[in-house]
Image (tube, rainbow, N blue to C red; front, side, top):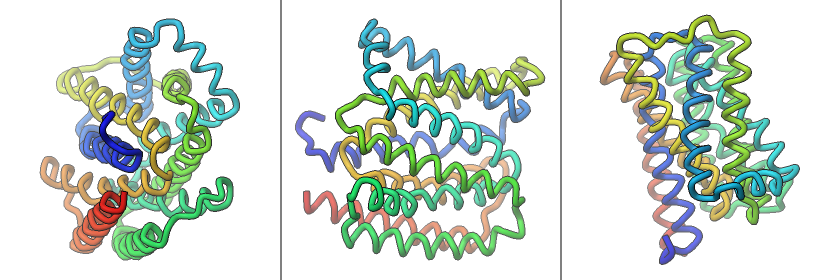
Length: 286
């Protein structure tokens, strides 16, 4: 990483994070836990995993870093907690493709918020990429709308807003390490789920699926995604999340036959090509 410039570091971190995240929707579908049981374990397992890892690396400086994050840390704890809850509830209440299409609006929202609050106007290439992918999202959305549920779709869009606000918060506090704030956010998610949870029992496949999901698809990515906006603009980080829009439903289709429509596949292909071309140009210029 030391030999990479900021553009390369940020792009690599965001790309690896999203690759880890892509099977997440599949694991949620495969689990037999109720919604709030899932939310609880997706909060508590990543919390302990990353918390103990950071204690080993930073020791008691973990708490110093947390308190130094100040107002930015408070905002990030709030937005991070909200998105972690709304994502799971959305997946449980609508088609996977619908949720991921809603989340795919995050780059556009990040670019708008970045222009307003950070005066960090995205370059022409990024705006063109956002525009093309947004058209692809609309194309997918109109086909998948009839398969979904308004409640689940609305929560998916709230997740996108949370991702955008969170990325802008990290970008505005580039000198601060907000990973400890994200760890606290995970604890808040688990505590909130305790209000509604019906059972803590992990039975049969859940004994394997839930821990793997919580570490591979939640703990590792949230650390990488929290670091990435320190190196590249928030809109560019969230642009990588569009990969999940197509890859996530494919995982679900392959394993449990929740088949994405032809429109989802076509729109997803447009998204992947656009992201690949955009990333190539940005890395070449850097």
